[in-house]
Amino acid sequence: MMHYSEQEWMKYVKNELDKDVREDYENHLYSCDQCLESYLMAVEAEEDELPIISNGADFTDLVMAQIADVKMEIAQKPQTGQKKKSIYQSAFFHYSIAAAVTILLMTTGVFQSITQYAENVQNPNLQEEPSMTQGLVDKTFAWMDSLEMKNKEAGR
Image (tube, rainbow, N blue to C red; front, side):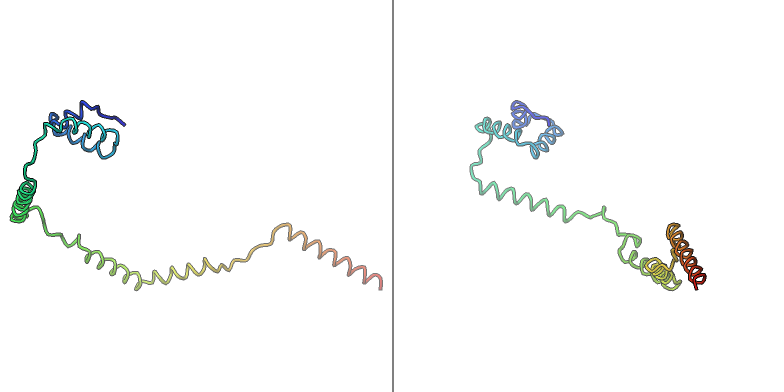
């Protein structure tokens, strides 16, 4: 992070910088404690040259009156910048479209077919084929059983 020197902050305090540069300095103060310290030291050094407010209450009243005047001017201005929202930008339009699509899907049976598909996925009726090893074991036992039967028939 780049830091500004005390001399640069002195120029800022004395209002010797351009407006854009001053804004950069102000934005930098929000994120840099080291430069804030330098700024405060510059203000303390120039404190004697700053104007003194003789009556703080009158000054406050004057500022508040000016703020009230500006608010009145803003309120009295015709607001040409505000346009009425079109029907396509209203929430009612979007909800109406969503409701219409839902009704359309319900009447065409899309939701019914989706539920049937979900049931098939949850309960598959697939017959699993036995593995090759299981088939060999079954055939071996069948062959052994047939040998036993032949031995019993021969030994009678």
